[in-house]
Structures are given as C-alpha cells and as structure tokens.
Amino acid sequence: MFECPFLTSKRIDSFHKLGLVRWLYTRGCEEFAIQELADSLFIADLSLLERSLTELSATGLVECRTGRYRMVHSPEADYCMDCLSETFKDPLARQALLNSISSFGGGYDVRPG
Image (cartoon, rainbow, N blue to C red; front, side, top):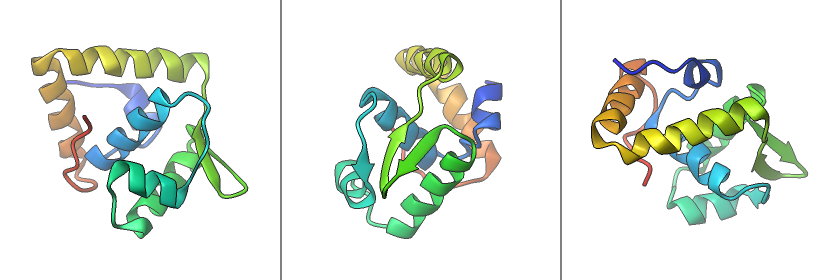
C-alpha cells in the first residue's frame, strides 16, 4: 500500500483535493479566485471547492489573500509535490496512490490528469 505522510498531514484525503493541489502546484505562485478555479478545473460544486480550499488553507498548503487562492511553496511541499508527479508517471504507483486515497473515504472520484 502506498503511504505518504505528506498527504496525511496536509489532509489530502480525496481525489478532488489531490487534483486541486496538483493543479495549483503546476501554476507556481499564481493566484486564483474561486470561480476561476472552478472554471479551470470543471468543478460545478462551488461549496465542495470552497470547503476543500478552506481545509487545505488550514494545513498551510494553500493560502487565501483577498479572496484569491494560491499554493504555498516550501521545501517540504515542493519535494513532496515533485515526488507525487513522479508517482503519477508510473501507472502502478499511481494506482496504489489513488487506492490509498480512496481508502481515506473522502471526496468525489475526480481523478487528476
């Protein structure tokens, strides 16, 4: 089973949050309003998106300033996000990661691409 303390500590407990974090990470330090995120990620449920962003903000992984959200980059986060990117390149490792997240029991089945 795939285990990642980073995912657990940052409460990335759903496919939805994983996709959101991976997408924000690839955008560097860009900031986005919630509607921009919803449009870019094709998420219709703004309450789910807002709840996810609030939870990720509470862990310090996402920051909200004046209604705009961005990924907080730190050496730990950058290392772990790079590791996740490498994991996604290997189909077996990716599936183990997704299975691990699905065992958390959270979120919708929105697999990141």
